[in-house]
Image (cartoon, rainbow, N blue to C red; front, side, top):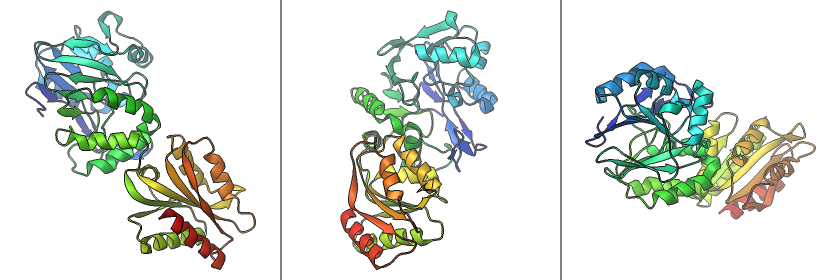
Amino acid sequence: MNITNDIKYIGVNDHAIDLFEGQYTVPNGMAYNSYVIKDEKIAVLDTVDKNFSEEWFNNLKEATEKEPDYLIVQHMEPDHSANIDNFMSIYKNTKIVATDKAFKMMQQFFGTDYKERAIVVKEGDTLNLGKHTLTFIMAPMVHWPEVMVTYDSFDKVLFSADGFGKFGALDVEEDWACEARRYYIGIVGKYGLQVQNLLKKASALDIKTICPLHGPILTENLEYYINLYNIWSSYGVESEGVVIAYTSVYGNTKKAAETLQQLLTKKGCKKVVLNDLARCDMAEAVEDAFRYGKIVLATTTYNADIFPFMREFINHLTERNFLNKKIGIIENGSWAPTAAKTIKKMFENSKNLEFTDTTVTVKSALNKESLNQIEALAEELL
């Protein structure tokens, strides 16, 4: 695939994978992206997963018959770095370009840091290939500490590492935002401040194309993608609406959640999303929690705590810096309902969260009092 006259795509699609990073379902597979810049000097940007070594090397040889001058390593996660040692063994004269932290990780992964062929780069360093001058921009914790991105001033291309990536192979057409959002929140979501810092650096560049390490190459309407990244990394509200996330043992908490959903819809709420945390894709439920500005957590008191799926869900939120949201609570308990107290404690270190005045308490099953509380909660959420 030609990205520009001089930049070639040499990545691969993975349809054998079922879980990305051992936890995220990827029904449409994954893409591991890699690129070649052909100029007076030839640069390869990143390798691919170990399961696709042969295919990747074939793609590389098809893109250029000459030995590359440089291998640029932007990110050391094994789905991108697994073939570094193979590459360096085949191409004996190629120099390797990376951050100091990346070379330390190479020592850990491969038992060598290629010292005699290493070019260590830092913020603002450049590499001249001929027409193309590459500028290296540090992007620590987006989403590993060694990460950098690369800007080509000739073709105005930003090689964005894991930034602007998404789940899904490139030979499957699907909406970008849904799987990019799930990817971002799940993998990079904790590091919003670091992403904001990178976006500020990128705003000073004239970017015509974004080439991530996962997902499609972005060439049109870049403002759309950058705006979404700005919202996600600043923990803003992307869509107006309410998310109701619930767990239920015998159906009574579920009924309370569904009753609230129906009331909100009847009262004109633009969007109400209902997630059964025991059955839905947890990553999608987490994605919804960050997407919308208001969330209701509905769960039973369980072993003097809360139901395990709800605890897992809240842990996912808090470890990703969940903030700037309004939270309502529906608790259920037949003799000692304490779920609301537990939930609030779990968020005690989170910032800028607002809890509704109304907490719905269901004692075993809905009754007039708890229905009135649901009505009051609905009014607060509108």
